[in-house]
Image 1 (cartoon, rainbow, N blue to C red):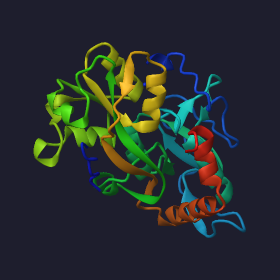
Image 2 (image 1 turned 120 degrees about the horizontal axis):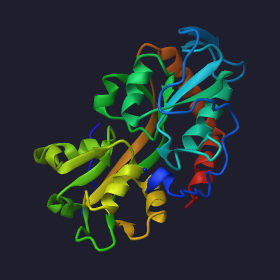
Image 3 (image 1 turned 135 degrees about the horizontal axis):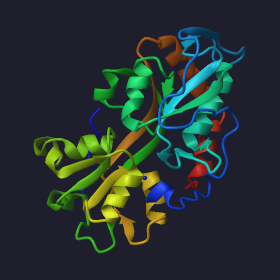
Image 4 (image 1 turned 90 degrees about the horizontal axis):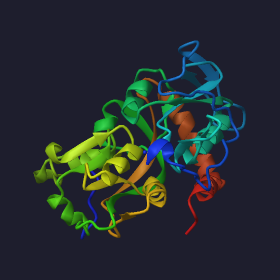
Length: 289
């Protein structure tokens, strides 16, 4: 879907990124590391869901394992730990879903722009990376029900002349993470509410985009609200504008060739919403309002 603008509408090797709520890995297995998808074993292995939870048979890339594609530079949804593990909302939620399905989790850490291809090609089973549902992505993958809401916000330096989203039209360059809805919205044509590709620079992750802001390569960064808070907290001299840029919902992407897995994940997700697990996980990393 196209996200409606609100009216009036990663910082070095995480530069001492010390996430207060992200100090340990989650309970399940998160064994993949590095920048590419983990090697899968028996492609097309069929798994039967654990009794008493999400039922039925579905296909996974590796028997007994749920391969989760993510980009672990997006706190508090996903980030790396000092010991090379993974932590965050999506990591905890993936483990909770996998437990319902009778699986363990392997994290396939990769560039954000590679996640949809990894899932649609069957290298990873699902994608969880603070991913918004868009018409463009729906051409390649299916999505589950949503599990979180977020906003796109604008990061600027403290002395910036950019005060509201309307001022972005006067910005020389806008930095975004490649493949994100922030990039899609900003790089769209002015007729569609964007600023044109010539005015937007795509970076591999939000960390690099904020570095570019600090070094004067871009005048603003448009990115999701929660990671924006982490980036600003780690970088004195930056701030988030009061007015958000866009609203969006997060969901899990699944291959179009695996509707049984999508349905099983949806059933597990509903159970986790109904029993309060999803809210508990989100509140663990984001202060409850």
